[in-house]
Length: 135
Ligand code: DCM
Image (cartoon, rainbow, N blue to C red; front, top):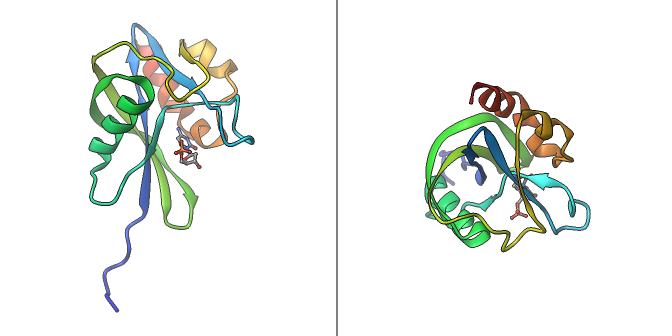
């Protein structure tokens, strides 16, 4: 038995801002979440950094290269041992396309408030709004 506590596995999500707007992606699965909007991302693999995982997920899902920036918003506990965190992501190359989502949307502050976001991501609305209103 080790005395070192197990660290939470992490799900990372990217906040991409451009021209006063934030990129949202509409989920296709699972059925309970299909049609609802999220910051795109996914699970950090074993031996992968959150930054590398975010870059990999956004490459797979949006066909873009990003540079992972600072954390934004609170930790969201998904289940025992699984935590969801948002990071700023800066577009380095490519134009986002929905490879894994139903569609994408670039929203301003007002539109963000009207989107049907997945419950977990609603925790980040204050910081996302603050950023959009400062742009
Ligand atoms: N998830 C979330 N919000 C995000 C990204 C992911 O709530 N912006 C959740 C949905 C799943 C888990 O994280 O419970 C893993 O995500 P995925 O199904 O996209 O791999």
